[in-house]
Length: 463
Image (cartoon, rainbow, N blue to C red; front, side, top):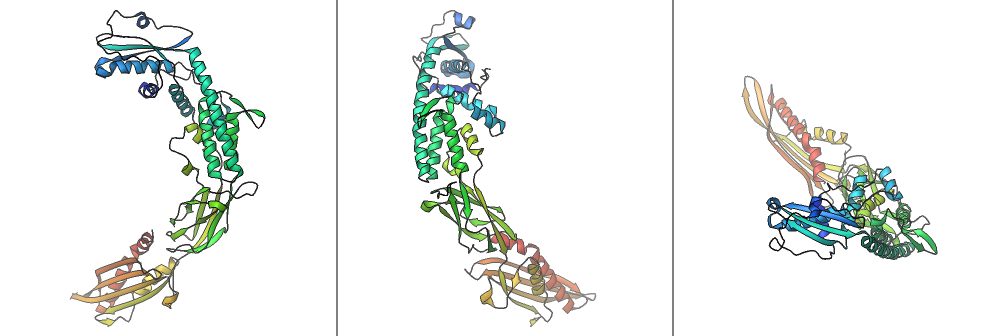
């Protein structure tokens, strides 16, 4: 079945074609093209079983002075569309069945490759009238087959060379070199996946694309990642104190050197070094500089970072092969506790220490409910909170007394002196039947307003 349609985007195809070698592409201009009567090849499309034939036309009103070049490009695109692309590769069929690749993605890649390989085409004729420019190209099927045979052999040789380099690197435990070599080994074979290109490997006759595909699969699936600790403790806003490492090994227990890994919070959040490497001994160190989520149970996930070794131009077929292979992943559970707080506070009403504290107990209660705890000794605290609240008399009207409260709150990380949170409120009103009660109400209202955004702002400041 011919999957090539002449309704392809001819502009894209023609751009790819024109970079290929051509025997006898004309340099004619409208001035030296004869406006003879319409040739036979325009009145009846030529049929020749020995040639692929392409005819293109371009409207002068649309393309202007580029009409001749456009007609030539479209003729070559028409020629290329006659080269059938089908899906017969077991590798591709399996990827499509697994949903890792669509038929359209594969055919688009195959068509582009067919166009890029379009060598040996011949210019036959051109013609123009007042409105259109026409071009006629052909390509000998025998010549095309000979060119493809030469390219197949070159692809086999190049692929086999990279394949052997990849095997050698894998034996030395150098995953990065082995993986890169396997990718380079597969690329020359992409245009020929529908053909069983056979070569000799270790004295055996094999289909090389299958061998390389299996090598990539074994290389990726053979990796195991093991953390030195599966569960650790941490504190909100603090770096991880535990020495966390990941050991990468192959199935036979050999350490895998220079394996790129990616680390992320699968649950929770924090600041960390996302890209790490196993180095020369097969061990990679996880570095978490701060935990920023208030979740009590958080999860660090480490997996192979194959994307860092792939360019953005990897063809869809090869990317689908790589993505279809399960890759090693490991997780570390973090039990997160909140930092301890030392609180210094003062509350005044009418210039005197207020006997009935309102702001301090309210804020402490809210923070304790969120999992924070307070200590009496500042040397034992992670954070130091300073609270200052002042209530000032307002006016009396019809037996109702008004008091205004001003409150400021500051939270400092005692380890580095950084201010984590700061907020202040002014003239928060309280109205009661007497001034002392109005003072209590004003201070409580201020405490509630602080609490509404305090914890959220504290967590945001840690990020």
